[in-house]
Length: 373
Image (cartoon, rainbow, N blue to C red; front, side, top):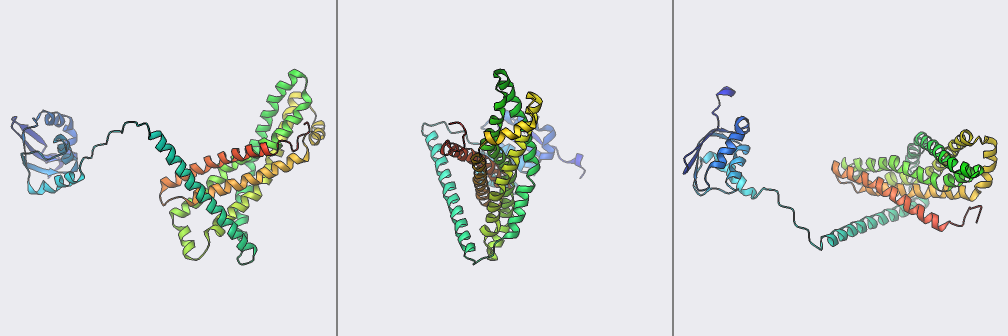
């Protein structure tokens, strides 16, 4: 039968009986759907329904009638046996309508807060378990009972360290230029041009350098670690390693943690040096300060303790970023939605942890490395 020769859907009613005929399928109903909806609405609720003349009925047409009937079979219904199964399935589904949103209750906020606290507790317990397992693996390796994954460590060190140098250097240089430019505008007004060395040196080496590099690494390398472990969870590669008797922590987690912990101090030193160079170039252009004077005044304005403190911050920040990234990577479930959610949570949590740890460092070392106290 040609497509245009198919029986067209039709509805006739005399107030007591509604008779349907033709093909009640999506293809046939689409051109006349609006008119049929109006005709269905005009049928009285007490009318009897006769579907014996319906030649074809798909789920779209059946659902259209089911909704008109109030999601229940009418009392008077003449239905061919061939169509009985369709409406039986709809009846088995029950009320498929979208439930109304529950009204707000006073304890809903308390329940939500409790759910957040329970979720945080679960993450904390899993994180502590991860750290404990890594410590046990380190003891195992130091006692010479296992083989150190040197190849994995070197590969991760190259990815998180060497490959991160261009973007770290570029952002560091621009931050140094901006800081020097803004500081020069204020210092020139008070005739205190020489103190720009102190502002740039202490601000970048002690605080801004480690935090800036950590934020960049958390967004770049931390997310990559989480995504890599997550994909391995989705493709069941982690389970395959366990089946072969290979520790997932020694081969996957430990190299990432060690590599980022060692690479972060070097990245911090690199980023801080480039940022100070950018500030020095800007100071020469804005305040006509010579490079020779800037380099000679920098060691006096920034004691060596600040450099050591900045490197220590970098190592701790790298350790925390790697642990958080691996924690969320191992929690990925075998679906893409979980992968994206855990990757996002990894980056946000890493940056938050870096800021919190930096605040602890600021309070604990407030009397170290400051030339004027």
